Length: 148
Image 1 (cartoon, helix red, strand yellow):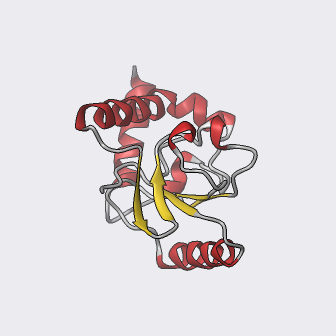
Image 2 (cartoon, rainbow, N blue to C red):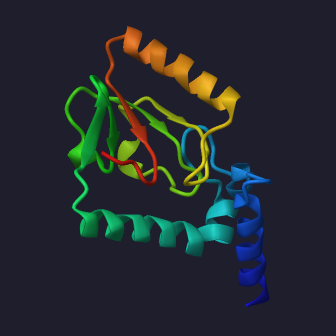
């Protein structure tokens, strides 16, 4: 029980706006988590995924919303529009879904929910997105709570 509380306290501190340390969860730039992180944080990671799925079901949120032509937010592979989109994942607490591996170019910018990425991360994501758009690849942004 003490370990679980220690993990929750660590996550709470890491998510505090004055600390803002999403790297604590160990998410890689390809959206995967190392085994140690999955083991250590699995109750939290799977709670967040389940909570988000229930929230989406209850709210009736559409499967994706177009932000601008060729830009949108996916919630699952079967709900993506066609075109083999590149995906920028702006979450640190949502492990990359296995169905998004393979054909989809993927960049993870770990960011706590309700926060914005660091300026250097935004710049890196914009450059990556511009390269994909220059190749005529649609771009989708994944965040825990995207709004239409």
